[in-house]
Length: 258
Length: 314
Ligand SMILES: Nc1ncnc2c1ncn2[C@@H]1O[C@H](COP(=O)(O)OP(=O)(O)OP(=O)(O)O)[C@@H](O)[C@H]1O
Ligand SMILES: [Mg+2]
Image (cartoon, rainbow over all chains, first blue to last red; front, side, top):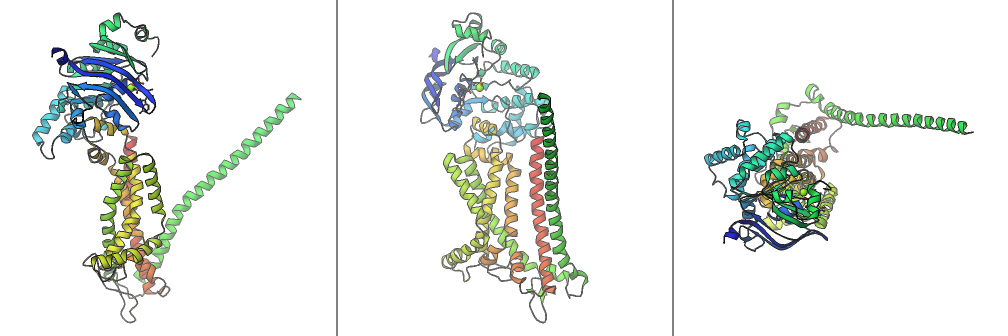
């Protein structure tokens, strides 16, 4: 019981093919609940692919085949009775390039709730409150409170990425997947988003892909190193960075390749 | 020997750039002429059409613009008291266009969404080719279909006394406008970045919710332009409506009433009208009206499309 309760995402023998190309090979991993886990590895090793398995958004490409098992919060997400909408409500995703929808800031935040509740059941007051608290949580409220009706695509990239995190929050997700959330941002923006992620720790299970070793080290409690579709090493971040067990991990971390 | 060669190549190269420059200049000039001639043609056509109509206003034609603009009475060939009221014709055009758009807009946008969002690979390619083929069918063939296929269906199916009427013309025009709406609409949807779709999907939206919550707002200008181009096609179309709407100058009371449109009137009566006579000039005035309507529709479409580009540049 306690063992299971501590685990948020767990995969067993997960394989994934794009057509004939195998992008994930026998991935078995347990991702702890309420912690920040970073996913590192050289370009093309399958980090994004693995992340996109967890909300099943990989399936939108016709040529994807998956085998194996993924359990999130004790539920196999490939079970017949799993609704994609519910899964994606529980498992939120932040993308590499900020992608706010081309509608108002306000509507971006309410979007998730609109999708998940019946038409006309969200009152104006509830929506207003939802928008304010979500924006406050990402420290964006002060900046945008006077232009909530403006199109979100006119914000700066940093603000856009904050908004993309904020719009997940009204859905009360349990897991947040982040695919290199800072790679489109400058140093300042990166710092702001890192602070924000730090603030979300414990409330959510966060899985973050990054190419930035310093970021992985600063921000995450556990770290997974991937290479060519396989998980090479997984452990507490400090251990991975101080005394990696695997030669390849060590070389990657020292920056020999990647 | 070596020096001579160098000199020679030098000269050749120089001559080459020279002729290249001349050729380039010629091409640029030609392109300019083409571009300007398009404007000249439009102006010339307008001047011609307007010039033929204008004498009505100052010549001795017994023509009253007030009657033209307000009367439903169109009997230009009457030997003693001809009437030139445009209203019934205008209403005819309006009725057929509105009906055709009521059919073509949902069908066209639906098809555009289907082609762009819900099908892939071979089926998508096939559909696009078929839609382009549909756009290439000459309008006189559509007229035939109206007379030979639609008309009997309307008579037997709906019990109408005349099979060529607003319904017939509206359906035929709708089928003619749909390909325009589909191809322009599909382009507009295709231009929406995929990251928007993924954002919607990741928030739990279904594909259909993505269409109306994400794609419609994102592509609304392009979709509006698609609809307006369809409208333009419907208003300007002549041959098919001439054949399918049944020539009866009247204010219709039901979709099963035959009408006569502005375009069909010009096409049908120009041949019989006396050169430079009153009827002749009034037909040209109708041409001016059509010109104005088409201009407004196209300009609106244009401004909207520009709007999209402007926004994309921001
Ligand atoms: N839609 C797709 N179709 C075919 N192959 C794909 C597709 N997406 C990814 N791949 C391939 O799968 C492999 C893993 O890609 P993935 O995007 O998961 O890598 P990544 O670790 O996220 O890389 P990066 O660090 O560059 O983002 C790569 O070799 C890539 O070429
Ligand atoms: Mg990636």
